[in-house]
Length: 350
Image 1 (cartoon, rainbow, N blue to C red):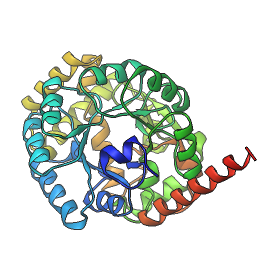
Image 2: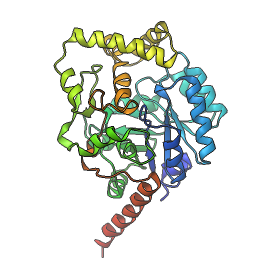
Image 3: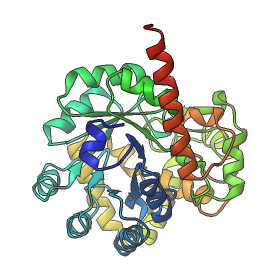
Image 4: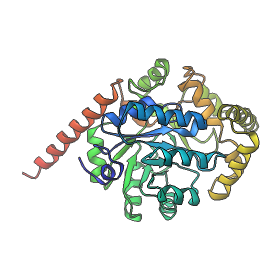
């Protein structure tokens, strides 16, 4: 199945594995590439040496093309860009921190720029800054997300930009792929579906919560950092929903210090990054200050295996997922279902 996405990324199938923090590690990215999809390494929650090790490990495990995700306003962003260029990384993904200079540098080196957006205005701005491919994520998607449904946002962005558009938010099977292509997308991007695979590093106890949660318990909240995020309504999120602004600010300070220690970036460096991001986006100072809340609380569930004590970012599609296949099995099944769906639709013309 050839589309603008497969042609530009050099993958066999128009299926992208998104860069989920603490989840999209080298093993998952390599498994996706070996199965014909395109995976992104979750560099946004990694130190510079960890990103370098991750790139090296992916290249050891696969000859397939892959991408790296990171925030362009972290103090070591230029060094991450150096790594991507030196290692011939096919694409980079980013979201809330576009940097025109960084985009120009990447494009000059032949690295495709592939941001994820949750609103029409952000898609238009991203293309103005030089994006080669746009990933739109509708409100059904997990983690930071917009308020517009995927099907509507896809139509809006498709008609407003002149670059290929990938659809994300609510996809898990071959029927979804054909539906997205029919609406004008060049492929689909999935996070939650890849989180729930054998190669995903998420602990079994955490995966079990995802598999047992109905769609109506996967809600959107602004509590963590003032921006809408879709998560499973677990005991921790229930408590946070009742917390005061002062309590959330104190939590942000504690998580900010922990994030500084984890990434090796000084507190001053994080503050400078936050101010730079605020200056070039529509985030408020409060939202910027609380940015470390999500990654640190997600780590508790995704790395430490304590789903009741951490945050569980999730697309609503988790509510219809019931098993944990190998990545190769998942992608093969999606493509088989896509072919069957396309044949069924074409038969209607006879």
